[in-house]
Figure 1 (cartoon, helix red, strand yellow):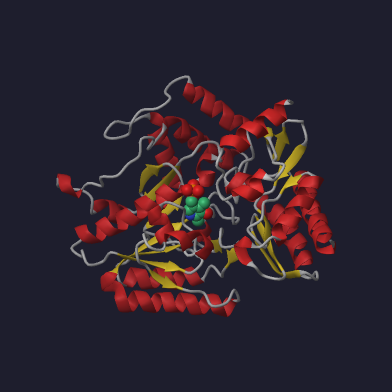
Figure 2: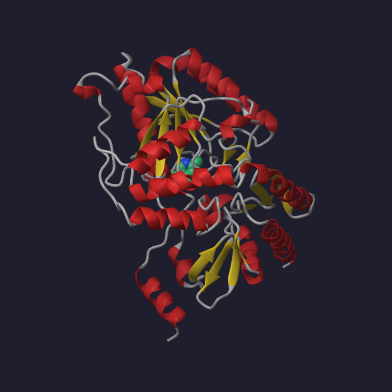
Length: 433
Ligand SMILES: *Cc1c(COP(=O)(O)O)cnc(C)c1O
């Protein structure tokens, strides 16, 4: 047995994979990744693959950025972990200061483990906040159809992607869901108008509105006009309803601004962040809150937020998270987005005009297209493109019939050009077959 065969045998005998139909996986010849660097994954045989989705949207500065590696190892030499309940350490305090300095309107940070737990914490914060400001009847969450906020029960309750919800309908809590009738501009405008109407009409029952700002990621990289967020902000502010913006995917430069909400000039009451938060190196996230929300949790003991995870504020993750922000500054990462955006846009515009492609779109470091024929998340079309791309040296996991790229924000230009060429060739080849 080769090393590769041994790993695959052990894996196939024992590992249950996320988001993977297991019979298909067991019949497949999986990539066995041994190493990663920058935009590249290397398999055990030394073959290189461009990481088209930055490892599930997390690796915003590329794999093993030397400064993140140094921050992690130097933190590891000092303090691996300790709880954050009433004691503290430099990484938690310094990351808080640095992240809030670039998050207008936000003044407190609550550390969590990942995106789903950021959403869980935000949901609970909004409900407890309503209760502690004398409005216990406000406990419903308003969501947008096809939103995705994570896979824990609370996060799944406020998510709309039907395939992921279906088995759990009986245990998910009830929300007020506003569906988007069409992916065209008018469809979004109608949905947001309806969302504002719902807030105005039912404010007395609503704790919070939760939205993915500007891009709905897992729904298939659906992009809506940023200015629509302003209406939601206006309606929630007028009725003192908490606005939660889930920037788990869109934050850290993914859309070209550090926070996607900056495109709309909107500031939330609670912001969820993860993925890029730790540069994709460690599982960690946070909820940012305004001072107004925080104030409602002060005072008597029973007003505290009794919530936390074993690894809340983990020093290793926090030290890396702190260094991520320094790298954004020192390497002027956001200034580098424009030329990358132009390349992604040109490629996807071209692909959008091609037969077999129903529509294409891009924003910042996101480019996506829908293959004709529909079929949604369970469709096989995207996987044919995946196979073609793998043969050409790119890892291009689709969302059903949506083929997309979300490379690291600082992907070197020649790597990006190579990736986009592979995407074009692979779409061509898959459609020809
Ligand atoms: C990925 C994602 C989540 C869940 O984050 P995990 O770290 O996978 O739990 C939540 N919200 C959005 C918008 C996401 O894209």
